[in-house]
Structures are given as C-alpha cells and as structure tokens.
Image (cartoon, rainbow, N blue to C red):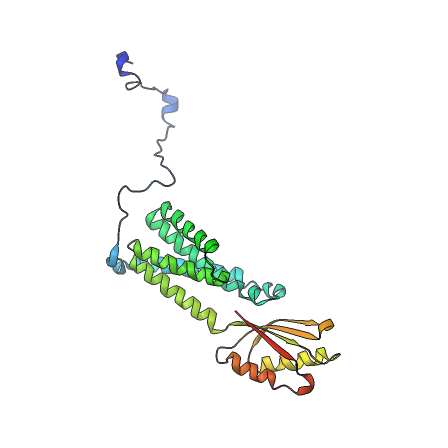
Length: 254
C-alpha cells in the first residue's frame, strides 16, 4: 500500500501461481435486479416476431397437456363424489396455463413481474368473491391478459386471451352436473336407480359416479352432459320415467 491517505484503494491481493489458474470471476446480482428506467416495450411489432409467438404457444400447449395429464389421471374418477371434485381437472389445466403465462412474462421482463403477478393473484384469491376455484382461475387469466397488454406485449396478450377462450369453450361444452333423486319407492332403490341410469345413458351422458343411500331411498348421479343436449330436455326425460319408480329431482350444475 502506497500512501496512508489512499486507504484500501490501492490494496492488492496476490495469489500464488498454483491458485491463480483456478480462479473464476463471477458477476453476481440480486434476484430482483433488472434494467434501470422503464421496461422495454415491444409494442405491436411483436406480432411480427414469429419465433416468440411459436415459442410462447408451445409453452402454453405443453403446460395444458401436463395439467391434463395430472387432472385426468385414470384413477381420479374413483374418488369423485361431487360436482366440485369432478370439475377439478379443469381447474388443474387452467392453473397450469396461468403458470405458463407467468413464466413467459417473467422470462421477458424479469422476476419483478413475477412478484407483481403473484401479488395480484393473491389479492384476487383472498379478497374477491369469485364464487368458485374455477371462476377464480378465469379471473386471474383475464387479469394477466390485461397486465401483459399494459406491459407492451399485445401479441402475447392476444395469445393468452385466445388460448383461455378455447379452454373455456372446451370446458363448458360438456358441463358437469349432479342430479339427486329423493323419495324413491321403498325397497326398490336398485331398480329405480337402473331406470334413471338408463335414461342418462340413452341421452349419451357419461356417468362419472353413482351413489345410493338406502336409508333415505335416494340415488345421486354425477355425470357429464353431452354437447347436443340441454338440462331442460334431460330434466323432462327424467321426469317422464314410469310413475312407480319416479322420485323428486334436485339438480346441481357447476
């Protein structure tokens, strides 16, 4: 060190030749380090970036496929006992899609955007009365589309919205329903259940679960309604069963 007034400014550390060859200089930064000033805005020119569009779409498709792989596990129907449980595969797919959207946005703008998105998601989940987990997922997807558009990625906002639109159309084309049939003739529950099951199958409904309660002379069906049918038409068909096996219908549609 030369000159006491210089302090540590001129201090040098000399390593032996045997150690100097193994030294690797690493530039470190904080987790939330990002560019100073405003975030870069791609704008409408992003629609010309075919590589980004294809890469983002592939990420969304992969996330959807992976979510469906878990949601529609072959053993899952064995534990379904309600409409909410039957709808859970759709929720898994929607949240996998949301995770992919967040991942692509973070990749473009950094971890700070990820914190913002998770903060918005937590606020929506716990401070908004969306009614169900499915509706919460759609609310988060809409919020993400608006956030991405505001960040200057209109092309990715359009992809996100169109992808969510297709998912919702696919989910709602065949809604999950539950029909509970009470006050069936005593001692004929199995026969009555078979008649109602036959009506559902004749209307191409896919029965997910069937539960009989002998102590209450009740049978419940959780099923997926076909695209070409309506609840009103199916209700009329169920009410048209023979009077000696007829019960009181109670519907639940998610």
